[in-house]
Amino acid sequence: MSDSNSVEPKLDQATDVNASAITAEQVADYLKQHPDFFSGNEYLLEKLYVPHQRGSTVSLVERQTSLLREKNRELHDYLGDMLGVARENDIQFSKTKKMILALMDAETLDDVAVAIDESLCQDFNSDTTALVLFSEQREEQNNLRLLPRADAAAIDALLDQSQTRCGNLTELQNQFLFRDQAFRVKSAAAVPLVKGETLGILAIGSYDASYFQSNQGTLFLDYIGQALNRVVSPLLQGRKA
Image (cartoon, rainbow, N blue to C red):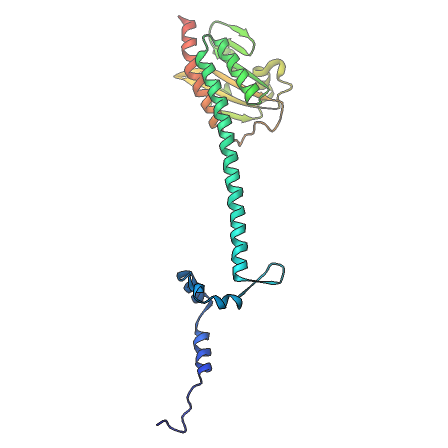
């Protein structure tokens, strides 16, 4: 028999005490661990509301649906971007393949210069090119120029680093490389050609000041330089024989 003076706690009071001890984080963790909780408690969905951005409220299911739709749109946009990049890479690969095959078929240095000029200007939207190679036997035709290394002092700074440079060249460098086109060239890329020794330089000019920028990547240009090194080197050696 219970003491008549004792006071039994009411059920709703005990519930309030226990509820106050449960934090929002604990509820969130529980729901994460039991994602199917609402499967047997569907009636709760009618009582749950999530604030809407416009101030009204929507049910949890509606909110989940909205979030899933938003994520689907984000994934769709991401996939579209990836497909766009893939298509662009495929186009770039085809253009590069065409250029490399043309270089492989080149039998003379003039063939090399023509192949480079056609590829870079027609396929890659540059405006002018200059292929300067070092040889004691002088020659000049189209965009190809052969001259002794000592006569290229104007571009020593471009050659000494043996690294591709993009952006603005000095007026003297511009004049030396592009000659009668120098006044139109607003940005350029200079690719030193080195294979054991400095073979020369490939210069690519654009009439657009923003086409070549100092902070752009040079992977593709370096690749062109490496391909040219392997084609040009034996042709230059053949001229010495």
